[in-house]
Image (cartoon, rainbow, N blue to C red):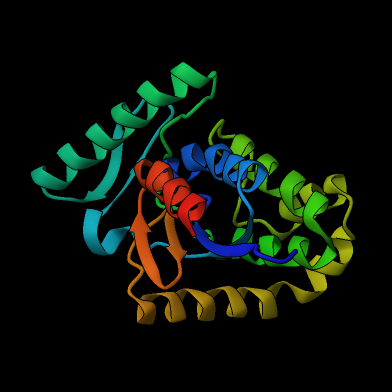
Length: 208
């Protein structure tokens, strides 16, 4: 469409902040003359928040975090759950640091099929993962989600490794651009980190 701008939206399924940004980002495309270009950015959480594994009761089984990192992690979940309650969403703390590269590969696969399939996949992966109802490291589990979304799940299983490499390459390119976290939005080469910038992005689009 003439006059339509592109907003690049970087996301990662293992980020609760990216989950909370998903629907408001959809609304940006609904309300403004903009096309969203969703891209994966695979977070390396242990590099800045350490790592840990807990059981169903929240007992720490193993961990590599200092006290400051634990405080940040606990606050992050408290902050996200506070917002999630307002919107009727469920965010259960993860029991380990997940590798989301395969889920990002599924995102790329869904996008090739079309917007409707992508959105069904995107919504389902986020919602089920944060209910602890989806193994995002399982090719078969993600292939099943893709099939339910209207794609060829068996085809994804064949292409998963190559698409995973592509998702990693997109993440490295994002870092070269200055991206370091999610959700991150890029508008006319200007970077915005965090969903709190969406009103500012709306204003920019309206005045363009």
